[in-house]
Image (cartoon, rainbow, N blue to C red; front, side):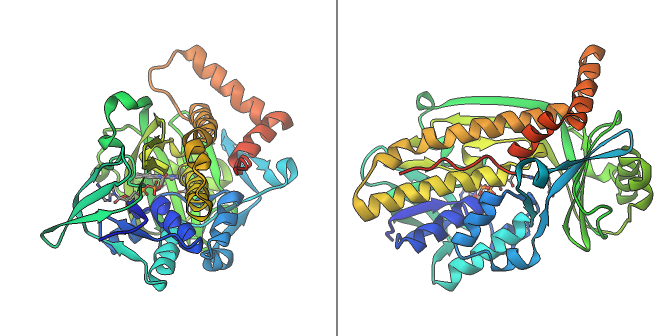
Length: 393
Ligand code: FAD
Ligand code: PHB
């Protein structure tokens, strides 16, 4: 088996890379460990920056997103049960679109398969070879047989626990990590949203986030400890806790509904540098993780892929390798800014157990500063809607 770019992982990074390269006439094969149904059902991110929306449109996968996505011109910050609106439109003239990662993934898979693209689901024991030379190979198991995919380049789009980053010699990689002393319990419910925009709530019991997927589906998150057991969180307990943390009229209006999914996500910041080793390129969660408070994970993955697709297309159409050489540094400039913002939003809004009371007072002063200062709100808004893409090539 042979292709131009062998892609490991069919999350948003791998799928979008494959779609963008296809539009440039570059062939790809995607190898994915899970089944199509599993990949399409995995509930994760929900907020798309305008740059992400534009790129999905450019990639000809934006039709349903344009119809069903909810355009939000701001968010609310809740403090002591009072809502403070951050008006993105007035502050930075931009907006975000609420459209689930599950839907982005379904749209991309459908578009790829419609053109006859090869996505091999349910492969096992993927290993990557020869990426320090000119002839990389990916070996994998399929239906009990060992197979080999020869390619010019390997794209490691296989998420934070994937095989690609782990295959890079340790000495060639610097990793940076911060682990937070809390996690998020997330629940997707069949209930209309309590507000028309997202609510990020600070509360002394811990952070809460009210989000949504559609006019009939809400996505709820509450801060919990990383070792919490899901079976201790029956639906009613989650609703009660969310009501307490939202407070005020929002709590009174909160509607309950059938739970469609529930899970716990630990909070972590992580970056591996550089993002390229010879002919292996890492993109998305394979290279970096952010805590979800800034809604940046999926958007950063898309930004990496935009840079990589352009660099690979330039290589195939005009033999240029300067954009491939610049890939890691170009991506990392944006990655570190998103790391900073995600760390800041997380630090601003969560309770840190056992912390010095002085730090808690400073945190409260900072939230009061943000909700009271146009300058601070503008900085938040500018980062939340997404920093501009750097032009390459
Ligand atoms: P992934 O989506 O992780 O895709 C990687 C793919 O590679 C997967 O399909 C995986 O099955 C496959 N794979 C892994 N290993 C192998 C292997 N060895 N061989 C073959 N295939 C392999 N971001 C937000 O902005 N907001 C959120 O609320 C949010 N919630 C999240 C909750 C969870 C539990 C997780 C894990 C992430 C969350 N994120 C969130 C982050 C966001 O979902 C990711 O940034 C985004 O999915 C990155 O896309 P990706 O394609 O790079 O990686
Ligand atoms: C979500 O809707 O899943 C979501 C929204 C905003 C975030 C994180 C997750 O910051």
